[in-house]
Image (tube, rainbow, N blue to C red; front, side, top):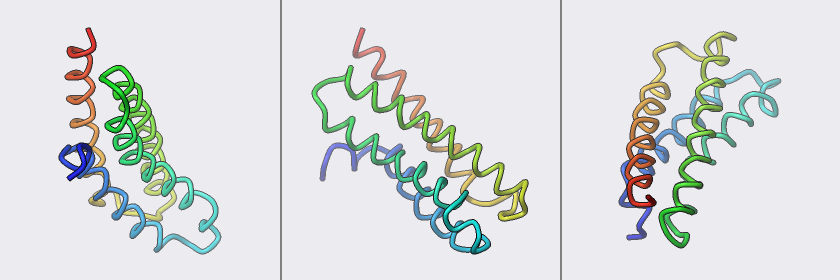
Length: 118
């Protein structure tokens, strides 16, 4: 098992990608290259950044990639809210719960890496 595959943040982020793909597959066809594509890119960026950071040299670089993952998550959370606003998704969609959990885990990982780095 690779180091990033042991991280709960990565596991939740991977589940989030799957759910976002499932959600966006139900969007109107005219959104296929609009909001749906942006949401998919932001979602994929989260576990990808975690994995890339875990594969780098040391806590400082890992911390940088956790920051990128957190930024992508914030972007996705905004896009999820837009999807609800546009009636493309329900406000109680599982993606919100997964995003919240991934966010908490990323924040915990960020704090841990800060203590290692200082």
